[in-house]
Length: 582
Image 1 (cartoon, rainbow, N blue to C red):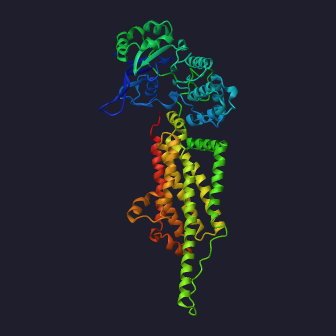
Image 2: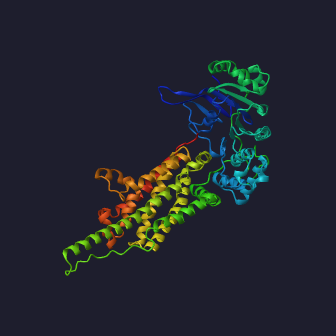
């Protein structure tokens, strides 16, 4: 059994997924010791467990058995501090509408507290120069090349000068020149210090730059040593010949063979097991970014992170012109769809003629005419209200269906770096609250001004606001739970589609079904509540004749809609704290 004596040590790591009666092994008995100041290449064929291994090390996945140790600490009992680890995933971890410089400053503000504006400037400049992209710091992320995005990903993780830097397939899809530059950059990041860089790669072309190489095969570690030892062990002429050699034996045979000979090849540990020495104060910018670390680094508080995230969200919103125009089109267009049915205002409810000097037949005709007129006016008033409600729920779906799901992977990465889910959710809720308030107020004021809808305008604005907020909150919860923005959008649209038929505003539902579905239909509570604001007018009576509402509900409409909002936010929070790595 190998001893745990590296700065980073893995002790018999197993990872299984699936049902207990038929589990699937993703990692099997991985033992690894890595000394400080090393660039370690983790290689293997597709599906060999490379990315899974580094996710276990990073704490994204929890091992089924075994332990990960850092400087003698068991990470199952004491997690790595956010400043101690940097994780660069395969996907981009920056927002397309931000510039390189803005991405760096935001990362510093979210992950490092106690820095002045000048300190942030010099640290960001130093890191961008170190990774070679200071010259393009004014460019937006969406126009960067693949290699430039990989460099930015590394730069964002260097803001805390981590002792452990994990790069998961950061050279994937790059041209040979860019691939070599990224590998050399990671090599430089380990020189003259105690930082460990783990570089997952499927390409062995530049593996000679690594201090040691870990070979994974079907979830098992089958080699760890230098490049020269790699060729000797596999009896290969070049590194590219290793993978074909692996295919000639089964994984268990390779794993057993390695365990029998590992003492001949594994790197020798000649340094004491201790954490890196503290560096100068946080305002001191290192020359090479590798050896000097301001330690300890405190993560900004909940309020500070909230303010940074909220500011960033508005910046992204106004730069995404397609989203701005879409929201403007909905804001201005939807109220117009409502008022076209009553451009001249609501017709007056006429009293039936009941004079004594007309015959019975004439009285009957006037009564029928009054009934028909009342039904038309009642349908018009009810229809105007339900159209407002349903269109606002559609706006709510558009507001938030993609809000979390579309940036989920970036959020997961930022959580790993110390971002608090509550700060994140609070920034989303505040941003969406502004949109909901604008949409609901304008809908109510515009329709009331054109159609002269009776009732208390303030109460109507509140009920329409809560209907929009309820659907926005519910769709935000859906967004936090779905794997992709497409799934979230589809489910949210279906949910809006159920609002109209189940509201009871168009067709009456059977009693049992009505009471079963009513608690979940925000459109019903808002529609019913707005109609109840008219109860002191004659319009309420004519509406009751075609679409009866329960006057006894009273303030229950407000309470029900508020519950929708609160439950949606609670589920959104649960979705945010849930790990959603692919």
